[in-house]
Amino acid sequence: MRHVDFSPLYRSTVGFDRLFTMLDSLSQPDGGQTYPPYNIARTGEDAYRITMAVAGFGEDEISIEAHRNVLTIKGEKAETENGESTEVLYRGIASRAFERRFQLADHVEVNGAELKNGLLHIDLKRNIPEEMKPRKIAIANGGARSSKQIEAKAA
Image 1 (cartoon, rainbow, N blue to C red):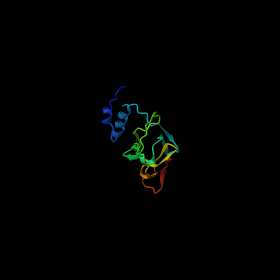
Image 2 (image 1 turned 120 degrees about the vertical axis):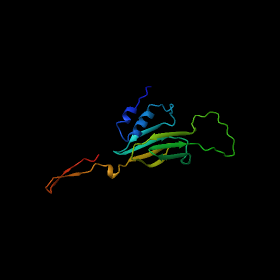
Image 3 (image 1 turned 90 degrees about the horizontal axis):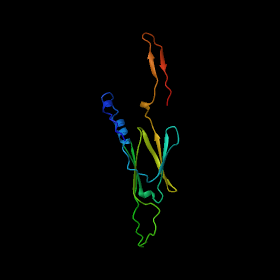
């Protein structure tokens, strides 16, 4: 795979350092990690849901952390000590530890998580602050008191 050099863009842009770092990291393979499988769905205009298959894991064995636009989901099975020694003849149900990371866009927040029927559902919502939404700007006429307004359609 080719490596793209973004250094020429640094001298003509301001504040896009994080964007170029993200683009650089996308070109690097994640090691072929496929466990556990997951879906990402859009459930509304600014709402998303990550669904992850975590069969065999309990609520106390999964941790979810959102920090600096990175959502990290970790699962680690607790060692069961029932006092009985059980010999497993065939292990078809995966119980290995996992860690998945998702890059979140700016202003995307985790609304909640639910574990149901072996599926972990994480609801996300994009909350754009008021100061970043489009606003109306009044145009003042040099000597007259009347003003015109520019209207912007909110996205």
